[in-house]
Length: 288
Image (tube, rainbow, N blue to C red; front, side, top):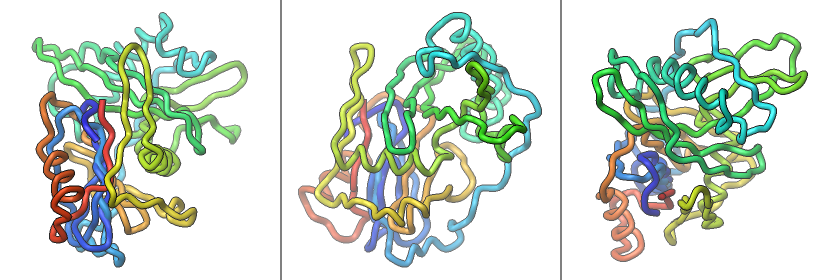
């Protein structure tokens, strides 16, 4: 695929190394990609899922005791209504970004995180918001970030956030329900829906812009049991990597940059044109 603000999906598979929000094959430690306006790329992974030292679970994040509570009565539409939009962009998101490892300008205050793109992806696991935000910093600079969102409603009576509250952007409520607005990359159902949408070559339209899911000839669909074996891979740094059934790795680039993504361009050529066998085949991507 082409590009959506810097988060790409990749799959890795049975003959080569891992990558993510591009699709390729996997064997050995995950490599990293630089993204342009791509959100994801996928690559395939080796059948044994041999990731060596990289095959670790992300360490726990500090628990955050309090979250801004947003009125979510109208679902995703609530986030563009005032005063909810202002509360999200000026309070909840700046606080969330400041505690993320992948936030590039650590130590610099975020004055506002302006919404720049919003695409709703319907899926089996729910409706997801693929969003990009422009962080306006106290020193006058701005940076664009990819943050897919999930609304998770509390089914218990405690109303408490999930154990890793570092994933939580804000608390939400509607009528008599309470829940959390959180990073969808932490939800295996979201990852599975992304892979399905890539296989179906879905195009999402919003505000005069489009988000395109695409795949190469190397793409393959997951089995139902594979979708139950999805987890984070390693500690997050400048991106987020997800291991999928030890067959694929999905890498989401968080900080977005404009320009042509060399890795995607090269991956497409090596996979679909040259049929080169000694690198992870590109399986798919998501672009704006």
